[in-house]
Length: 266
Image (cartoon, rainbow, N blue to C red; front, top):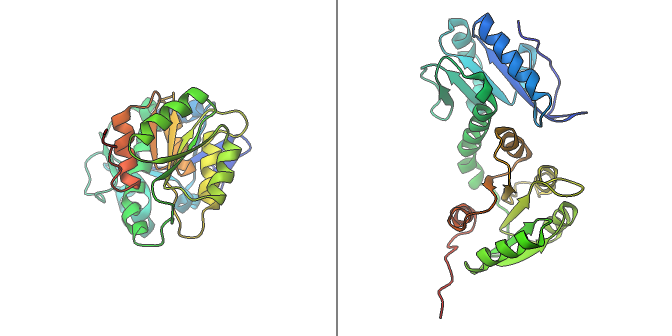
């Protein structure tokens, strides 16, 4: 029996919380899952297992496709269509849900959660694209990083593509700039003195005008799935690992800034 909680929201006294609902699986698998969840208590985001009474409030739902009761339950939940869902085993699930092998490798649970959140984000993105968008000044990028060397390096990469760069050295300044000026995209460092990049991203997204969307790309030297989950929960749109590769940066920017073509040398 899972030791589930029914806490609401995704913030707690210990930081960001990702709420996971699990349906089905054997008693042994559930014990292994609980062990993985306990280990997550030392990280951010913390994973909390939620009870059926808080099912619709879960961030991710994981379903055992070989459990008839779990499958039957899923068919009676219309809200699952808009939820990040992981199916363990073969199942005719929504094409945008994540499907993994039936015998789940529980230590990689954070990575599976990230994949589910990312897939869910891709599914809703085209819907949002038809609504109001962030009216950004053409080809302007905000760089937020406490390292002068990194800011200079990113500036050199961005200006090659005829992009106008505004850079700041802390999250507070980045939040203020995003609130008062117009940008096409934000490149946000994760580890900075004071407010970190995750919290800055959350505040920028929360402060956006109704229906607006300012893309935020997280930059970090870490590659932990926990960090990727935390970034996704903060609302980040993409994730790049330092040192940033020029081609990868260009590919990411092309999603948010049309015709970000490199400048041709005279």
